Image 1 (cartoon, rainbow, N blue to C red):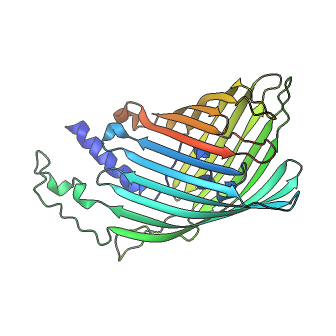
Image 2: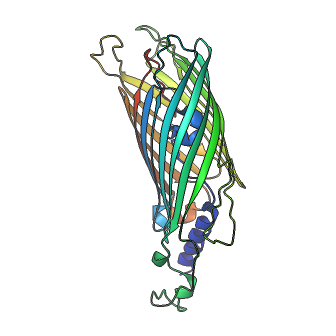
Image 3: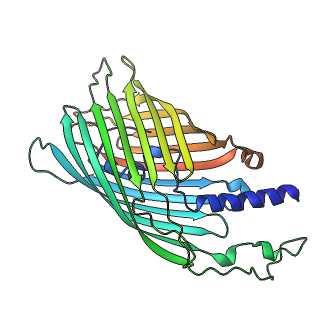
Length: 344
């Protein structure tokens, strides 16, 4: 009974702590416009992503997050144009615990990428959206419904929230530097790709409170990242390191690690008869929270990824290491020149 009580208290504390914090993904770069709005059109002519994460299922009702995004560069008829605009749309659905706190967000993204070198671009982007938040009060179990020995749903919860469903405007900005050099031949692999950027989300500090007479301003989120793909010369393989830093209010998150990618089948770039096939696997860590195993399969313009979080924090005492499952699907259309980028 004592252990069950501790788990219940822990879940409530987790919900309170995360109400004013953003979602996070272990395969961070599979949500480019959530990571940085300037990533819209930064590495591909077109890009579509679909992500799903289920977290803390061993503690009861899991936290579930689904995202879908699409971005594309606006066609520029000028030859060798020095800058290119891109548009994107991003949708987020997040359901947290029981009683379920549901959040939805739809955003439009605009980015501009300026060529600053033969293989380099500098991009700026902004995102404007509308968010919606609701709570299903009737599905919850409240302290006042415990009769001293067990939970009794016939007892009144004694809870009354003023604003069970509300909407808010949201905005963010970002800047991204991209270096991409594709120089592979049949005998040598010299591909090098590097991305780095900084962004600020919730710059307008929207009110996030369910109580009409109170304010709970959502803290701005600062995100800084760097990742890349560096080929191992004379081998059909590459190393993909990445580091991601997020700061929001009193919460700090650092995610870092690397993947090893090897090509199972090389594509024929000119005839298109053979489609490329590659497998990546590796280990990342969320400092003070989880160890993450990742696997990604790339086939031609499509990617499928899976990640599993092993809890390493004190929460591991109750989850037995079962932190989260995460999957993603991605489609990319490269630029006219083959400059397709893998970044995880």
